[in-house]
Image (cartoon, rainbow, N blue to C red; front, top):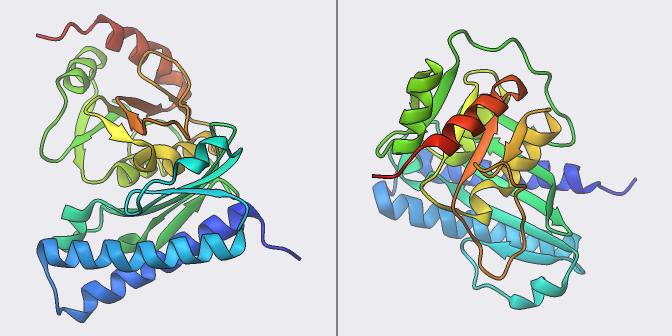
Length: 247
């Protein structure tokens, strides 16, 4: 039986994770040099395998020169070979590999590998959501918590939880470690396409912070903001975020 898109995404994300773990375990590189080597090796494998398995589809990768021919294609794979380069280079576990397929601009299929935790989460096999945390837990950047996120957390009475990569944060909500991931510091399509697909398949709310849907395979790949959260908090988070006035 032919491999489904979801199975392909999950297999490749996990395989890229193994490459990255192998490079780190070898101990020959560290810090930025390790991150660059990991990006290069994982990207080479992902792009080679996607082109071999789905030769008629488009491809957008953080580590590849953009081919604008993708803009005319309905199916476009969007990948981030190493999300959280700093965390990876520091020997932490909060980094990820993203493999996604956008169909007509929608994040339809996604897999997020968390190699440091030995996990790969996929839209093809969503895990059931547990009970919400009380008080809710809200994820913020380890190094630069956004003022909007802090504002929303204070109004909600949420507990702030610092974590590394975008994929690790989004999957923390999927896994029940947190309830809200609000990001306003700017991302690119590869930063959240796979996490958005996995989160939506799990039944979470996924949108821009004004409630608009996330759209992919754009000429400009920049995405200013993102909200992934449990459905029961979505309306309040969107309302409070709308009340924030930038200084």
